[in-house]
Length: 124
Image (cartoon, rainbow, N blue to C red):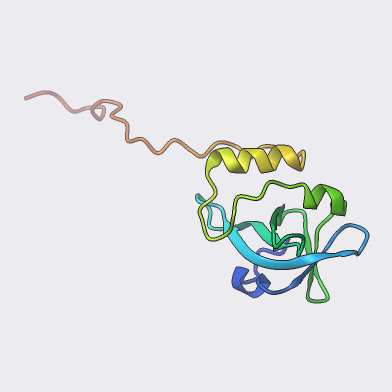
């Protein structure tokens, strides 16, 4: 998906499946914790007022609608974790598996390390 789009501008847009059938309206957008890039959208399907989570990559914004390259049935069977809450790593893993997406690389290890003293420094 285009990364220069303000994620807030996606909220309220109609969402369509791979065949152009309307599946609902974008209710929330979830950003990647590490990069801040929009990663998932919760789409209100209208079916019992349920939200289906969909991947924003490889979805496309076309003519003011979000086009999701998956079948309606798969989208409607996606896990619903409720909106307005943070997605846990376990929930994201469920979504990656549901859509048969390649898992993202693990976040870089940011643990500070002491690799010893600089060359040329002597203990006093």
